[in-house]
Amino acid sequence: MPSYSPMELMICCAAHALEDGRTVAVGTGVPCAAAMLAQRTHAPRLTIVFEAGGVAPRLPTMPISVGDSRTFYRAAMATSMADVMETCQRGMIDYTFLGGAQIDAYGNLNSTLIGADHRRPKVRLPGSGGANDLASLCWRILVVTNHDRRRFVEKLDFLTTPGYLTGSGAREAAGLPAGTGPYRVITNLSVMGYDDNTKRMQVRSLHPGVSLEQVRAATGFELGVTEPVEITVEPGEEELQILRMEVDPHRYVLGRS
Image (tube, rainbow, N blue to C red):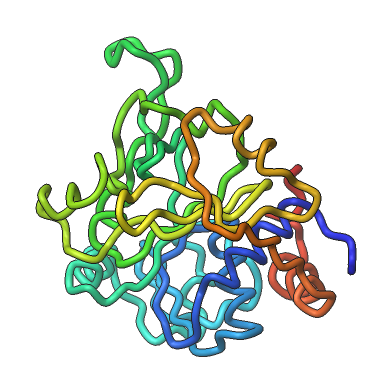
């Protein structure tokens, strides 16, 4: 098999999760790279939507922001953030990529602050942006992040973005659309999903060379396991070449350690 970095593996795993003919709301960085790779390989009819208003562009290279002119290149629409969010409200966006400083067992995210004192936190983070809207209204939420106990925590310091909240039925009780919610968490160690009944996070596949004990040691809450645990499919030479030469030739994302 070809050699690849942890970042390349995560992007390829995220791309594999996107199906042809679906819609995905992305930001810049890893989510955009994954969507571009999917569109250039197995999902040519994937519709990419940017929060700033670009709908279905044919991205020439990696944009540096959601308002970059490249996010409108040969697009079906050049619209607005309000229109994109309204499209989410109508249930027309299948996938969204989100992230945060902390994630818990139910896929809830914190991107607001770190610390117990909300008036004087240890770290003040950017906040929600459009994350709460996207998580509330898109059908499936994907998270791509590094895996360590500081990020994967038993209790969030602040709940910015809803996952499954407290478990089965909690999203619907809060008034969020039935059938929506977290779908996959892709890290440098594994790919995780959620139990159909409890809605708690569970390991679906381990990356080559990674043990279940390593994943559990890097997680601050009890993880379930999908039996049998699979081994993550490694990236192929062709998709790595597309990722390196077409998607991110300037290494905006791939240059990260």
